[in-house]
Amino acid sequence: MPVLFWIVPFICMVPLVWAIVRYRRKSTIWHGLTVIGVTLLVIASPLLLFLGVLTAGEIKEHRNRVTFDSGTWKASLLRPNDPIRLRMIDDLLKHHRLQDMSEEEVITLLGKPPKTDYFPDYQLVYWLGPERGFISIDSEWLAVRVGSNHRVTEARIVRD
Image 1 (cartoon, one colour):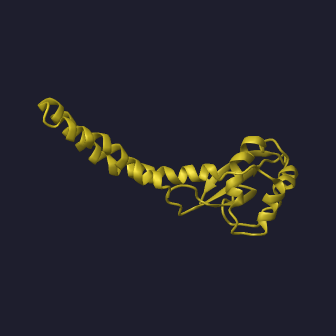
Image 2 (image 1 turned 90 degrees about the vertical axis):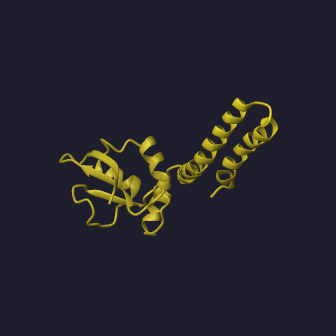
Image 3 (image 1 turned 90 degrees about the horizontal axis):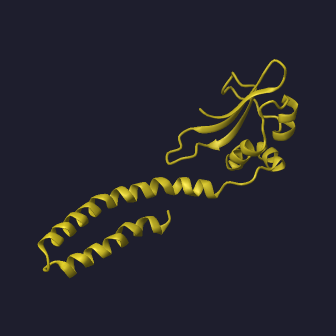
């Protein structure tokens, strides 16, 4: 967890505490406003801290994304617990239009997926890794549906 998320709320309190000490005796109205400000900041600090903890995982996940590489993707199929595909999937879907590709083209690009009982409505199902996010209890999968003409009709990320 970045130290920044833990320190920023407390650093924000320093100017308000300084204002209270400096202007405490000069104005009753200013004193009332600074007390309200400090109270709001003390109440908001745990919320800001909690939001920082929640977004830290998203920021880390976004920074760890990698460019799609077909060879690396296929090699990771031999290592079933390697979540490198999860780091590549956004780039894959952004730069390779799977829809309207033939089934053979998809298998050439991504490799033949191992058999799975998950998502029987889809013909090609690739395990990507543990679900991204703060609490990951499921897995993410790339599910590809192939139509009767052997062309991809749908490709999407699904969770089990």
